Length: 215
Image (cartoon, rainbow, N blue to C red):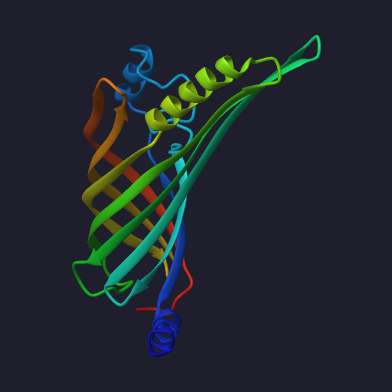
């Protein structure tokens, strides 16, 4: 009860905010597609759907420490029916992310506010391939393939970076963010283990609206 009361008091004292993050399409994104490095399902970490160019976020400042949450969702379903035989396949990913921001100066609308950020995110996958026309052996093989797809679409990532907010109006800020991002996924089979790791930078423009008290 004491912890719950402390959380309620701290939440009431927090300055809530929500906004949009815009990451422009880069030449690297075009090369990625041209080299056929996407998953082919449209829902993977680098397929541009769970992490679109324009992504919403929300959170709260607790004095000079801020918590930010974001989520991405993508799902692709393909169904076919012929001569009474129905087959349905789907691929999906839910991508929650949490960031911790630390303001490097006292938060005030009179000057730009630089902050450091560290965050984690994960891709929670789903995949299925079912048909009333499959034999037991065919369904078993389809289930194995779907399991491999789930492993391929899943992963975990982290990032470290810095940003800057500049108040355009008392409760409206324009900002920018640059971070170094790491992401990894692992595919395990009976014979081998295959790991894929990505390390790269990402820059975004931020538009943030807050409804807290003026710092």
